[in-house]
Image 1: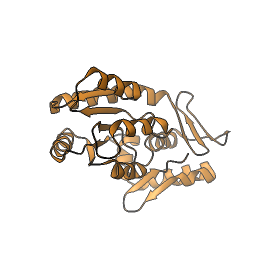
Image 2: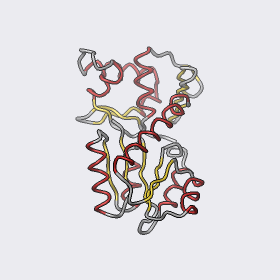
Image 3: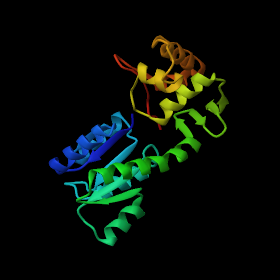
Image 4: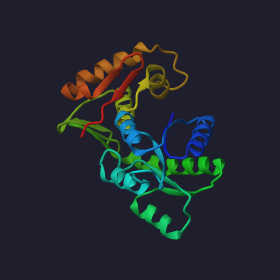
Length: 226
């Protein structure tokens, strides 16, 4: 499930957005100011961010600039939201690196449509890219995995499991979700299958395998290392 963060200081607007996202099948978290938002970013990386320009303290443009300046967050899709509607605001936001722009008051169905479109555009770039975490590199185009430049031989399921975790740094996946995504929805296996593959993956990756963290009572996540 895609995690979406909404940074919006208006409680009414934020709650409506979160409710709509939930009913549309998205997992979402809302924040009234940037401090709580940055703390959450350290815990989990979202698939998309809805970002209001007018915020108390650090405004949306400043937040966007920071996101684009950091390698770990530079490619996260961002849709700006604001009550301002001038061409200058729109151009400034897009020039700073926003992927799309919504002017308040906007319809909730329009918002969902924009989100789907931005996520579709972002997906091909992510699939074709190179994922890196510390000394660990996964090249999706070449279908290779290396640790400090040394090639690591993985089975197809191990590779897909690692790719999913690396593509979503900081996100905790429960075992059932991993089973569904890697072994498909019709797989009639048990969650211990995931544990066996994680154990094998860690062993093959050596010291780099430590970046695959066990989330007690949940499952696993990839630590986001520079």
